[in-house]
Length: 300
Ligand SMILES: Nc1nc2c(ncn2[C@@H]2O[C@H](COP(=O)(O)OP(=O)(O)OP(=O)(O)O)[C@@H](O)[C@H]2O)c(=O)[nH]1
Ligand SMILES: [Mg+2]
Image (cartoon, rainbow, N blue to C red; front, side):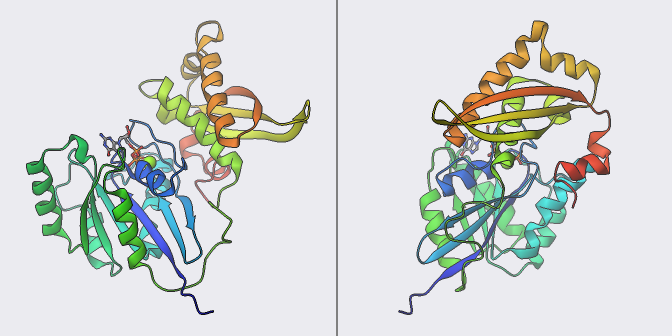
């Protein structure tokens, strides 16, 4: 018995909204990261573990890299994104036609200096003309020496299977980093808070999505009439009173809708019935407050 085993960290980086989380979910075949049409949806580094007998692929989805972060929260998000350069065995640099790079950004210097295999992934080819794809390829390969260039549509799963096989072929021989029955390094309650945040991003406009954070205060598993059941209390933090009023809506209509939408997503994820209570709290400066950022997992 000397079956070879391969493992490694495959870190997915790029600007906000290019489809990093969509790609991670396509590789995993499950929804790990939340996806919305709003930039800066992902705020943490999220790990998805793909296991079989011979492989453990440790995918990392990261927040989109921001050129000039404002709030402390965005600075910490950027740190998560750039931490992808600390431990990668393979780097996936994801782009799409709407990325406005001029070539002088820090990411290109880092990519050039980093010696692991790097793949240029041109995403969203379902909405990109052939000539545009060629232009993008020429632009990026002129900046960085990529080991591989692939065109995909993460949403339609075009080219993602082939890309996955190629990634596996780039992994070094080595033991598993995590237990083989594990799929992520985060507890269920993290994903529950993300599902609520996704519903907020979908339902509310303008500054609301960027002003919100969700904290799970209570996550209590029990049974109800012999069926598994979870009671969840969640706090939604906003930065202003006026935002609290918007989240709640007239006569509580908006928060009711949010609750229903979130509950559906959470029940599908946990495969259990839940009872969900949402509370809105105003914390003016949470995005710059060390103590709160720490409790929300942005700071160690
Ligand atoms: N047409 C098209 N849209 C896509 C594709 N992949 C992702 N999208 C859409 O692009 C938007 C952003 O996708 P995400 O996966 O959230 O992007 P992200 O890079 O993780 O974004 P951040 O977390 O904000 O950094 C969503 O509306 C997706 O549905 C694709 O292949 N084609
Ligand atoms: Mg994302």
